[in-house]
View 1: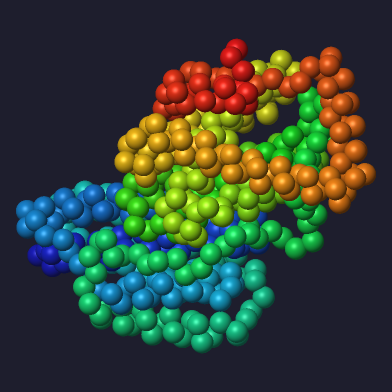
View 2: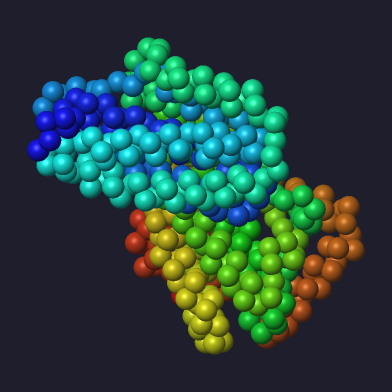
Length: 457
Ligand SMILES: [Fe+2]
Ligand SMILES: [Fe+2]
């Protein structure tokens, strides 16, 4: 054992700094995801914010192990929060990339390397194992970020922003002690619309979106099926990210669950992009929609940024829509397999597994916000959905009034689809087992059946 190795105290202080950076930067990325216009950036950073939070979670648990004998909470200085909060206040995505990958992450890597060089190789072996695993991932993130940064046009407009970041880095050990409950900060903004690349055609609000007459046999309609799904992956990624960012006072595990879903949705989007591209289509070949983000971000009856707003987002997106996805995915996997679309069936099957977690997470955290009262969950789901569908009907009515011909064309498409299915409406048989695995109880299942969105198989 080297006599120059760190003491427990020194190791704990070094570990908390790494933990803090991982946690706080994950928070920044969660807030920024809907604001990046580039889809590839959303996907890469959507995965990275989960990696960061996951690492912070492991480090935090090791840290509490190290501090146990003294039963103390090691504080970090307020200067660290000022530093990362400044990153959050980046004027635009370019500045954020420059601040994160050009400045902060190289310094995180230095902290990590210093840890590996200084920790007691025997006494602190558990931390070393963790930090060694972490080093590779931080390096991979850094190399992604620096490649992206170098591809951006050089800019001098961030100079003042970066100078301030450097000054805050130097002053990071100043300020008052921060307890873990005060590590994060209140949201700096509201983001009611999800950003998309310029020049893409958007589906009109109140239209029926992309309609396919036969998404099994018509090549173009298969493309439309995949493309519409892609919109849902992107928007859910963005909404869950904001759920985390806008509610820093929720428990740690809530953020882990939201971050995991963000990362899952990023993988789903990647799967869909691969399937689309294998068929010669690309994102933006068809009109896109951000409705699932924009339409679920805020609701008139909920004060902006309130827990009620968070509850409604989760109830509608996760426990209602992703609940229905459990049903439709099971149906579509079967259909695609029968039609010989094995690549699509395989992707949907992976997505279905994740969806059980997403709906389950929505159920758990909705119940948490309602003090565990599952009857109240049913009631709030009813109220939020009634509000949402009433709003959707109003958008529809105004679309039909102002776009008569387009609305007629939609009806013709629907009729044609029905004719191809032999006059039948598309059915969605309830996936009872999947729903039970997600944590839906008999009342939840009865509710969706009684509304007619799914049918008893
Ligand atoms: Fe998904
Ligand atoms: Fe999902």
